[in-house]
Image (cartoon, rainbow, N blue to C red):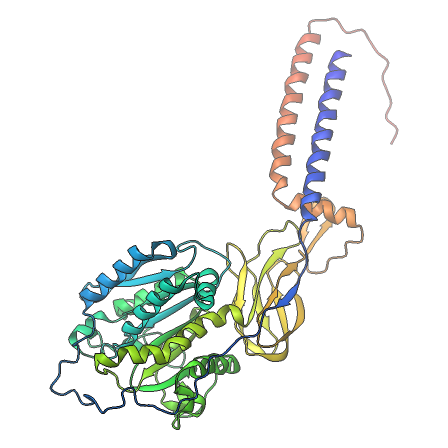
Length: 501
């Protein structure tokens, strides 16, 4: 009798613990909500309608044949010093790191600006790259201006504060320090770095070992950080260039990518925020499709869109490739609002949200697609956050998918503001017998049964297995102990029982 009472007590305790864990799991599942959307305030564009295109009123040093081109520009050593000094001065909102080295071993220094630099958050990331071509140094100077302006105006200027607190901005002032020091377009190996990326139309640069170290550094950088958008700064024209950069037949003709409308919108943000880019007579609105201007192959812009999920523009920020250094403050003034507004557009426009599982509330690294646009955006692995850039339009049908889950779709209306939209996806689970199966045709009529199945499919399954195994082991020990005790006694004969089938 004592043995039976002990076993009964153990079983009663197991039932009580199981009931408590089940209640706790179901209560936790009730905390997660379904998709919601909201729009933010309208995006304010900064448009200056001045007609002047000359950077200096006087015709000063246009040819510069007898003047050292680098006079007044930072050397590579000066640039490195400026970056490190910035890191010390603005350590509360920045970190300095290198993504690799050039052919001659100069570090490719990056400035990250954020209220939480180096931390992974549910915020979009943007990168600026300057000095892709060695003989186009204006970009490296402008990007140092940009970093310092953000540091100086954080918490006092609304736009600076918005960028620092809502975006992870990464700035690579010089991708080609060797080309700069040599006053050449290419790198130290005389390779044009904007022709050194894998191309979608022709089998260029698919051999990783044959790529330049600067190119490999950019590719690995894009693998490490999930950039939403980016831009490279060039010189020699005044225009915002967008994909595609080439055509299948190498012809010079307009060839838009699946997100052509969105890229036109992004390019227009830059050109209309610029002092006079949008008034260009050569490029209507100050923007151009790359292939329509002149086709290139192996370019960074197309590679980013195809392989890195990153919307990149190529910005020509000065008519002169290497203007006199005295013009740099004016060029900065002309491009300042463009550089700021393009970064701010990541949070002021587009579609943003996260993807969850209705089963246990965990983040799902699913895929966001837009009906009618042959391009997808993947949510992050850690927080399942996504950032989908889109041009303002009456409506879009948004679809969220994840293997093993039922897809969901909804329609949004996107004006000049951003829209926040979360998705909660239902697992495609059914129960057949006692086996939990993954089935695309789920007919689960009993809600409680489905909740129990979801519960078992979650992380509590391991808890139950450990608990049951421990309980079984204890029972086995008690039975063996009882058996040894009773074997020393003489058993009295009992009547045989007949089983009825």
